[in-house]
Length: 246
Image 1 (tube, helix red, strand yellow):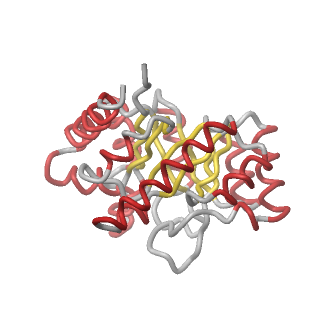
Image 2: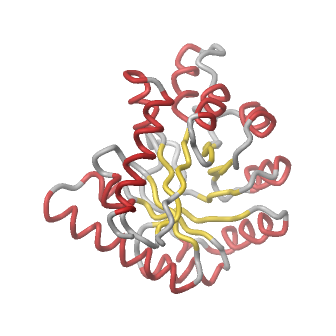
């Protein structure tokens, strides 16, 4: 039987709305609790160096209040490593980060990451944190992840989501091939970025993918339907997509 991928819900953009007014509402921790109650298998939050959405206190409160795993997205810096080790989330996903970007753009260059990346991976693993790398679906990046000894990779699906027609199908096959290669390497494969009700279906149908992390679309859809209904519909689509390959 093919396992249905877990759904991790990223609550960053609830904090984006909060920070637009500089107040306390809407509270991303309330969103995290609500997401868990609606069936999210985990919560993802990206503590950026510029603190443009999630802030340090959010991480502490999420750790205290949710009963599902926290996946902390972070840059490979000494500051973020220290924060992760202090809070010890279930998982830490190392992502690329540029100050000028609107959101995380593209995958981490694991192949050219150098000593800082290797040091970060080692420090997080020593602290008992499950480490993953957010990478493009490219063989060189998977080989680098394998060499670094990470147990998990998350494939960047943003390019797939941005394309249409034949070009999207070509990118889908790249994601599928990368997921299969990760599985052969003994690395658990996750995927995320840009996924919607429409674009999630073919990605969720890839048997080697074990988890999907989705945020911006679910938070946007919640404006119209509420967060629980948006999460439940996403889980239904993931479940239906996987049932066709069982």
